[in-house]
Amino acid sequence: MTTRFDLAIAALNHRFGTCFSAPDPRGVLDREAVFAAIEARNAARYGRVTEAAVARPSPLRQAVLDRQRAQLELPEVRRNLERARAARAVLLAETGV
Image (tube, rainbow, N blue to C red; front, side):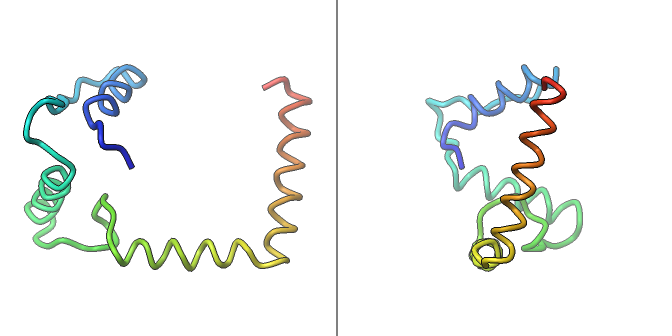
């Protein structure tokens, strides 16, 4: 999560050649105002705000994240992740990426 949306948007514009306007960091536009604007846009576009589709933090998203993190801590999953990371490291080393 960022509190400097102006810097995040500037980096996005620089990387992808876009021209999204960024909020003035000295202005009154804060995190809650950005999330309210996201919700309003989704409601206008889709007729409602769907918790799973709105791009902002929420208790529902946090609960899903917590469950996923718990799954990643299971021994079998951890072993598979370590094997995948090792395979990726070999692939990157061999390809020079």
